[in-house]
Image (tube, rainbow, N blue to C red; front, side, top):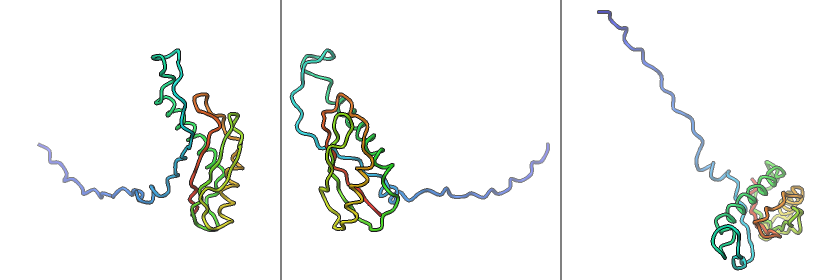
Length: 147
């Protein structure tokens, strides 16, 4: 019977994980769409009469489109700003993806920061065209957090 060598101790290192609180703060806010009250459903070839494309399908299209718009904006948002603060920009996108209007709905109190947020949205235009399931023009109200 052969004797086995005693097992050598193995150093165990703790995995370094990111601070979950910091990750939540760093996560980009999701755009909030503000749309007028939708009209009553119209008859459709799919599903029961009067059910339209379905509110779940439409909501998925709206969320997908919102993510595309946010991704486009993030390409133009600077990593850092001279002043920290929060600005909310309200803007409208036409059916062809062009920017119809943009203004500040909640100012930061720092005019230069407010202008920076508006410039980001304007530089991001034109946006992808909204899908047919999304009513146009599409209005967004997006908070920008500058640090």
